[in-house]
Amino acid sequence: MKSILENRPQLAEQIADVAEVAGYLWQKGWAERNGGNITINITDVTDDEIRQKPAISERIPIGRTLPHLKGTWFFCKGTNKRMRDLARRPMENGSIIRITDDCSAYEIIADNPVKPTSELVSHLSIHNYLIGKGSSYKAVFHSHPIDLVAMTHHQPFLKKNVLTNILWSMIPETRAFCPRGLGIIPYKLPGSFELADATIEQLDEYDVVMWEKHGVCAVGENIMEAFDMVDTLSKSAQIYLTAKSMGFEPDGMSQSQMQEIKEVFGLPG
Ligand code: 2HA
Ligand code: ZN
Image (tube, rainbow, N blue to C red):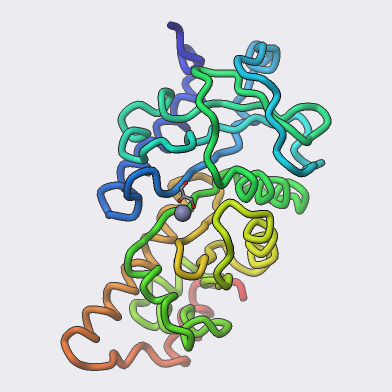
C-alpha cells in the first residue's frame, strides 16, 4: 500500500520527528505499555490531494465542538498502541485525521484506520485553544516521566510554583530553557473533559503542566521542542532526587542567581 508520506518530504520529516521522540519516551521509561500520546497539527504541510482524500473511517464524534479546528489535519498516536511501536512504525501505530466541517467530529484519512489516543479530547481541545490564541505551537504530548510524576505525590510540591522553583534552581539550563516553568493540575480522570479544560487553563501561563499522580503534558512549536522542555525538567528532578538520596537537601541556586539568568537571557515571566 502506498503511504501518504511518499513524495511528501515535509510531512515525512514531521512524522519521523514524532517517531524519534516516541523512541526517546520509551527508552527513558516514560511510556510503559500504551502510556502517553502525541498529536501534531500538520495542516501547514497538507496539499490539495491530502485535503481531498476520502475518509477511511466513519465519522467519529469528538464529544464537543472545537470551532478553531475548522479545516485542520492532525497526526495522532493510536489508542492502545505502544510508544515503542510508534517509534519503529509510525503509520501503523498512528493515523492522520481531518476535523469535520462542523468541528465536532473527525475522520481518519491515512494510512490505516487506527483510532486516535484516549486523550484525544485533551489534545484537540489544546490545539483548538492554541489556534484560537494565534499561537504557532503545533505539537502536544503526554507521557509518564518517573521522577516528575513522583514529585506530584507530595502535597507541598503542588502549591503554585513550588516545583517550578525547585526544578529551576537545580541547574541554570532549566531556568533558561523552560522559562515558563511547570503548571500543576490536581488529579482528574484520564481522558476526561475536566482534565482537558484544567490543562487549557494552565497553558495560558505554562508550556508544561503536570497532571497530579499521572503524567506530564507539554506543548511546543514542534515535537522536539516540547520533548526538550520536559527532558530538561526531568534532568532537574533527577539532580534533586540524587542529592536527596545522598542524604542532603540540595541548596539550589539562589533567587538572585536565577534572576540574573532571567535578565541575561531575556526570559519571559
Ligand atoms: O494513552 O497515558 O493518559 C494512555 C495514557 C492516558
Ligand atoms: Zn497517561
